[in-house]
Image (cartoon, rainbow, N blue to C red; front, side):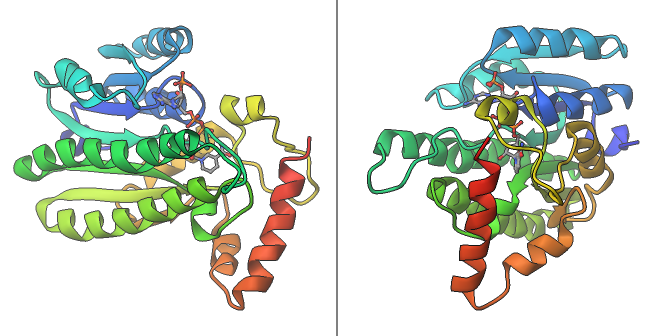
Length: 262
Ligand SMILES: NC(=O)c1ccc[n+]([C@@H]2O[C@H](COP(=O)([O-])OP(=O)(O)OC[C@H]3O[C@@H](n4cnc5c(N)ncnc54)[C@H](OP(=O)(O)O)[C@@H]3O)[C@@H](O)[C@H]2O)c1
């Protein structure tokens, strides 16, 4: 169980209503963490809050779009009076899949704004407070997509590559100050967002992780930064880094087409 003295007493889960985020909330509540859960849809957010309160912890909810310009101010309004020892930036599945040159720049900007700018803002704010206290942890959600370009998700893949390299830097900078940083890299995971997107989870031989398993794995490996690949995907990630790139990128693209083909 995660050490409440090191990473508590409060945790912020940005994207904490469904799927992996809800499972983080459940695991943390069982370990005695008070929680601030953030997501857009109030229904699933309140359902998750109610279910984790059953573990006897305090839970604050904030229904907002992280893309809103005043998001950090509104998050601070519900956290400035408590000690946040753990930040999990979970929100960030691809919200706009499209071929780049024929796509809408506003859609692409949304992906960049959430996965890059908002992730930086929250890491900057809570990371500074953790550094001052000399303890804490930050988990950023990465993807195997961050190791390779792909059709229809150029911005998503690039944003996850950004996040991975950013996490490595942050890990180096905060380690001497007692703050652990890890980029938790997921492969295909059966979340409500992916169910809604219509992913084909039935491809023979494909690893499909369950949200509860990867959330638990991420918390167990918070000290194993800067990168932890969840769900048994280490080999697949290693192969994604191989050369020659043309061969590797084309092969992965074929796999991606199958995944999106339900
Ligand atoms: N599922 C996979 O197969 C997979 C694979 C690789 C990596 N990942 C990564 O794992 C993380 C979780 O993915 P996911 O599949 O669960 O989907 P997701 O769409 O990122 O949803 C996760 C949570 O974030 C919230 N959220 C999403 N956009 C938000 C916004 N703009 N403002 C506030 N809250 C927002 C969602 O609730 P609301 O919709 O109500 O806002 C939900 O609670 C992401 O970072 C994703 O890139 C997932």
